[in-house]
Length: 66
Image 1 (cartoon, rainbow, N blue to C red):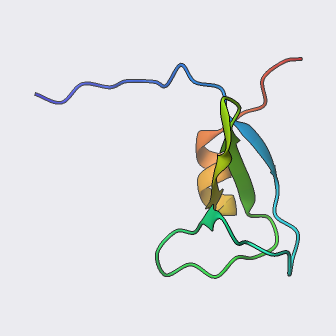
Image 2 (cartoon, rainbow, N blue to C red):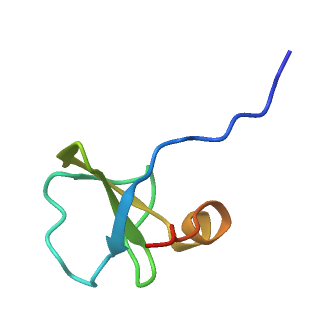
């Protein structure tokens, strides 16, 4: 039976800058990086980085109050 879960993790995220070097960043399959995409990383393992599409980011993330 499926149940809903929400992550307790906090992820560091910054905007992707057009044309930047993405060596070491995992890209979604069949996705060309574009303006508005975001790069995420784990704060406890900063070398673990991945790109998420703008649409996914807007739907699934909100800024944590500082």
